[in-house]
Length: 333
Image 1: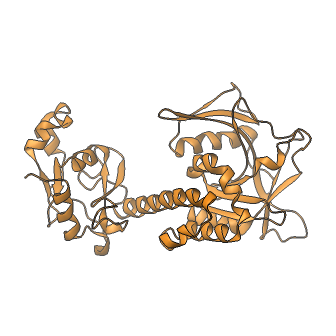
Image 2: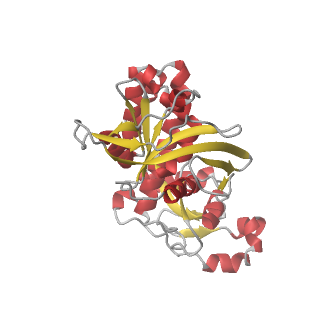
Image 3: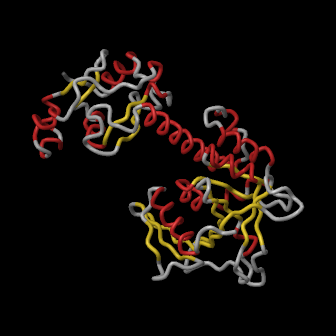
């Protein structure tokens, strides 16, 4: 039995778009299915028409622990809003996971939604664990399961994701990448067919960034290492940027910083020495935009003497990384 009302379900979409980093505004006054939205981020806007139902165990001769289904309630075909992208989604409340189905299969005016849309439970569980998973069903359609904070990634890449079924190799490699972003080599990615290589490269970057962010923020307990979170929400920052010598996505090459101290760290107004002491460059601070936020003295008073370190010594910043970071950012004490 469904647990959420239609309005509650569609509110999950709006919240998930926000969670994905895109402010969402409903085009229509009422929240009803289909839901017409415009998601915006900077100068980019995406119009969406969203059909959404709950996911529940499938009632059939197939054991429910193997198959879940989305029981649709619309007899009409999947129609797009003005200039919009169609999303046909199921929502599994228990795990905070969506399942996306290929709207091109239901785009004809003569094609109504089937009574139910199926997705394997194993795929939903994989998406819950890894963030993203795909499944080629018996009819060749690709179902895409994903966590709520990846809704806009799915919306922008839905067509390519649903085309993964055209190549068994590409589909298998994509799922392997989702399960372990660092277990797939650049040579493996290069083996993907040309038309899907961009999708896989984009997914690799996104999944590795998410993994790095999750590990670093967990190690620092979601608090800024320089002020214990007093200056705002923490972000995961590479000590040595990826792409230069010594730059990796290892947790020990990361530090959690609030927006204020991240900006100061990147511009070398502050640094961390070999003993994990916070260093302050008076000259850089006076030159930077920090001076209008209460001045150098107030900024210094908000800092810890030593950075807050992860409990696990293996996750703490390596001395070599701290030295390389000071060199790259041209630290002036």
